[in-house]
Image (tube, rainbow, N blue to C red):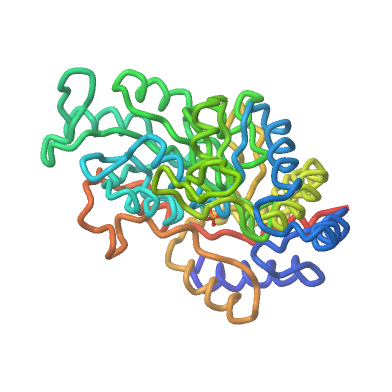
Length: 387
Ligand SMILES: Cc1ncc(COP(=O)(O)O)c(C=O)c1O
């Protein structure tokens, strides 16, 4: 079929589908106590991080994800940075990350002075390909004692950030085995994956620590916010300390015993988050309906594939992803519909192709490059199919 005809068909179908529906890329949905809890904060005067909603929010997230500890932060990015600080990542270290992720994953590594190594993805899970990872490590690293080092830079491969892209689980069990064998710390970037399960277990709970985001475009939002989830009490205490400028408890004095950060979540954000968590099941249900809705609508167009969650998973379908057979139509469809105000977006640009990261060590990127060429994220708000 001609390229032009494909473009026209996709655009027409899209407009018909979203005629009376929200057009935003991921409009939040507020179903319950958000205003009530915000009013409580304002009446109480507790609006910064000292306030009961912060610890209540942490309890709710822990209860939902079945983790012992949650540390609520100002954003997913600050949560990532805090975890890397906890593990003492520094200029002599390198961190394995997928190239196909939001830039925050790699930026957190850079904040510590460490260097990201970019890895290719596999196209079913959208996460780091375990097979390619093994051959990358074989080719590029050397074992010295318990640890592995980059042959070229002599720096330690100290950690990996495994990303669960668009709410889909990466091959976390295989990646965990590889990390364990090579003494690599495993951090899960589950910023896009709250509510997603792999083998009935929440994403973010497989590694040494998991990171969540509650930005305005995430399934559950606090406006801006993030969290670290972990079963490690020492980590929990240290992260709470670091996220409040490492201030020691003292009745009269200001004692700071480390270089900390202003990374704690504030009470207003946590109040919204508490109300959102009360409706998480309904929200995820609506988002899962989005997948079926798009799949049914696009079934007739054989040159568009709506990505289905990987086997053994139940995901939040954070952003519905469409793969186009003909990559040449991607930008045309995007431009036309975006100009008319529809909230479509290109998938993340692989980070190795950004000027800021072009000199970092990396693997060959056939899958990441090809995926970026032919994929679009469709509007994915729970409002589309909430009933
Ligand atoms: C994969 C990934 N990591 C980290 C982040 C950072 O989260 P935040 O925007 O809350 O800082 C995001 C946010 O979109 C993300 O998608």
